[in-house]
Structure formats: structure tokens, C-alpha cells
Image (cartoon, rainbow, N blue to C red; front, side, top):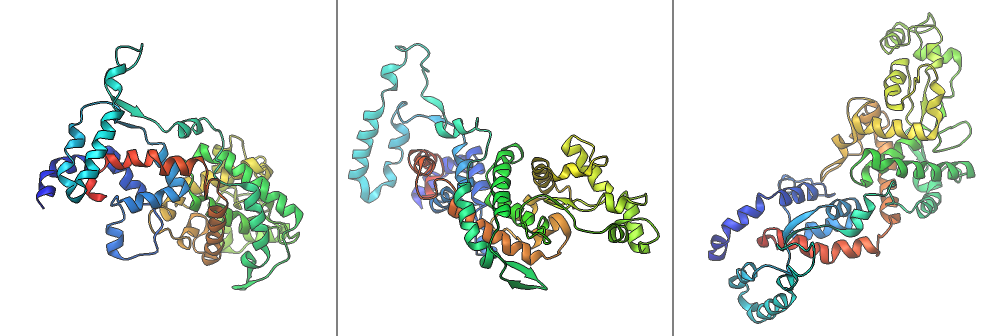
Length: 397
């Protein structure tokens, strides 16, 4: 208790720092199977274990690696900040004395300052993760090994993923070549566009978008998955379901008019298209602003893969489909893939979309670059991790 009282001022300063607040926000987004109130209350407490867990979540590790830190380098300054820890060492006094000697030998700053042009006189400097800085200039999200992902998915497509019919899960034919090619192109396009719309590589976002595309863009007549497609519906049926003419019921007619389908033929013209099926003129008009082109005049533009991906990503990020976005359901310690269906279409087949999203997330985790080794896990969990550790409240360690 005496040590706690003695170091309380410095602990409070650390707890209120911008860095610790950022770390608390980061660890609060860790996945957790514990839904208890006690766990929820401690969800943002920074501990060594939680930081290590965050380092194993690629998107969180990436976020931590982009933190720019400003503090006194261990290569300079006086020894007082290190010696202040001596009373806490108790039974490790001898080891700590050796550590102090090692730290003192590392302090070369004062020997260099004033002798090298442009070298800062103060050892209080910015610390930047060099590889993360380089990746800031990369145009693509590279978190997934696309070839490995497609191979794993192909194996699981027929039985593990399968399809739901009448609420029952069933086995389907093997993934055909066209679907396989579509998946590879879809992943490449998603990863190319992702950094433009999201700040961090979020496995859950990617998984739920893939689950949505798998269901909503399934061309059931041709048995083709993962490609933008136009709804297979006759003119007569489209006018009954989406139109404002005499063949539509009063309920359907009122909905059609409220959604901008005010002329006979609009039901068929503005039938479902894309990866996330856009229907009704009002919806096409809304996404005209996103696409930079008048989709009401040329709705088939939605079938272009790049535009279909853009619509899906921005629409699901910003809640343009229903008012709810990805962050409303998939951030935090307890993401909910079931209620996330409200992002697109209420609760329609919500459990089925969740089923696919969970399996896509598993494949993403298994096929991300650097999962078992590689520069990022080595750097994040090594020296850079130790620098982060020194900056937060030592009592958490």
C-alpha cells in the first residue's frame, strides 16, 4: 500500500494521458465470449494480457503500430526516472541494479548532441514504427492472403458454408470456376478500396460484407456466387412487387410511390442489382451521390464490380441502407452478427447471415499475412511493444 500511495501521482498522470485513453479504446474492442456485466465493466482496462491479445488481432495490432509516441528516449536523459522504480523491486534488487547499469551504458545521447548537425539536443523525441509508416503510403489493404483465403473457402463452400433452404442447412454443389474467379476478384477489389473508407483492418467488417455479398448476389438460376447481378424477376412480377401501376396491391403501390417509383415500368427498371441488391428509384438516386454518376438514368452501372463494392462499403459503413452501420453492431467486445442484419434489411434471414459471417471471419484469421510469423508480429510484439509497456501505469504490469 505504501508503494501505491507513493506512486499515486505518477499513476494518475499516466491514467489520464492521451496514450492510455487510446489504448483503453483499443482493448475495449477485443472479442470476448464473456458477456457478464463484470467483464463489460473491465473491458477497457489496459493490462499486459490484453495488449498481448490485441497484438494477436491483426487489425488492432496495426492500429497500435500506427501510434506516434513522444517521450524521453532511454538513450538519453538522467537516470532518475529509472532509479525511482528501485523501491518497487523488492526481491529483485540485484537484478535491477544490473539493469540500471545496462541502461546507463546505453545513454549515448549527451555524447553526440552538439557534434552532429541537426541532431536534437533534447532526448524527448517522437517514436514512429518504421514499417507502419511505410504502409501508410500503400494504396491497398494487404491483411488477407487472397490465394490462401480462396483455397480454404473452396474446400468449405460445399458443406461447411452450404446454403439454407426453408430454414434448413443443406449441402450444395462444389464451387464452380466462375464463382471462384468472382471471389478472387471481389476480394482484390474490396482490399483495394478498403483503406479509402476504413481506418483499420477490421476482420468483422470484412466478414460481414462477404457474408452479405454471398447471399444477396447469389445468382441461383446459374449457380454463381460473389458477382454483382441483376435480380431474376419478370416484368409483370417486378411491377407487382415494386411498381405503382394497377397490378400492384395498394400496400405495394404506396411503398413504391414513397420510394420514388412513380411511373409504370419503374418497378422493373429499378429492380435489385449489385452485391447488395439496390431496389427502388429513391435508393438508386441516393447512391448516385456515392458513385458520382446518375444511377437513375443508368441503373445497370451498379453491376460494375468496382462501383458495386464502393456502394456496399460506403452504404454499410455510413448506414445508407437502413440508418444503421457496421460500427453499430460489430465494434466492441461483444459484436452481434445476428442483429447486424439490420444494416441492410431488418431481421430477414439474420441468423443465416451471421452463420456465414462467423465462418468468413475464421477463414480471414487463418489466412491473414503474418498470422504465425513475419515482420509485423515480430516488431509489434518485440521492441515496440516494450516501449508501449513502459509508458503506461506500471501497476497494470
